[in-house]
Length: 87
Image 1 (cartoon, rainbow, N blue to C red):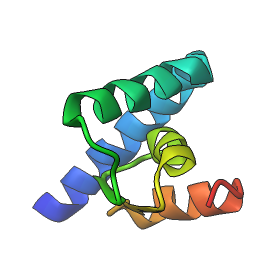
Image 2 (cartoon, one colour):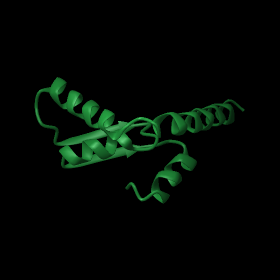
Image 3 (cartoon, rainbow, N blue to C red):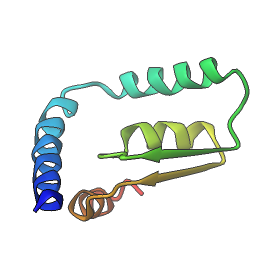
Image 4 (cartoon, rainbow, N blue to C red):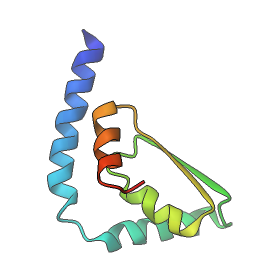
């Protein structure tokens, strides 16, 4: 029962996030990726993003790095991103 509750909660948050993030310009994710790169101080060889949702940050990191892996644990969200041809 707890697993189902967590999944439903996460899916509801995803729906809210979709409407919120659709209004945010892509440059926000560009700036965030730049800031992460700057804070680390050395070029990444690979990046792992857990709970990547829509994949906006992963896409920006992929522009800067050789190998980006995004793991999304909720299958419905993973399928939605795949269907949008982001990855």
